[in-house]
Length: 202
Image (tube, rainbow, N blue to C red):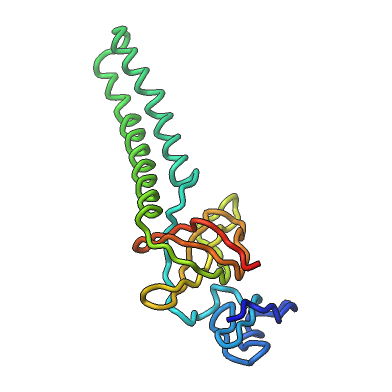
């Protein structure tokens, strides 16, 4: 494919672009599988992909999957633990009041455990995952919303040892941060994936 050629600039409804506007082939993805024409007006979610489609989980390290539980656990332990220790040391609280702090300890420990486990696993994907180069084909709405706006999943075509495959990867943001037809490098480990860098075709 000589790159995606933008030959459909006029906005059309999905039902109007079931065939490639250049060669007439049936539309199976955002890009014609025969002539490489970009069919940008068809929603990614409405298409039957020409290659197997794999839903991946994000191994990206960000605030919501690592920072937030780390902060949450730190607050619960950082407040309740000193109060319990100081209170017992000064003898100002009866022994049975220690039971009051148990739920806070548990929440703090579990939150920290979640954050550390996710951090270590994301690092494992980056260090042990298989590196694949792929082409961005399009986007679709995620089921997760941020401030009332759906996040985005990116659709990437990869060459794998089992042949070409599409993956859908949550970006954790509402922005479409990678250009369609740009090349990205992806680390894969089982059904987990993370984009490790971005390259353009220019």
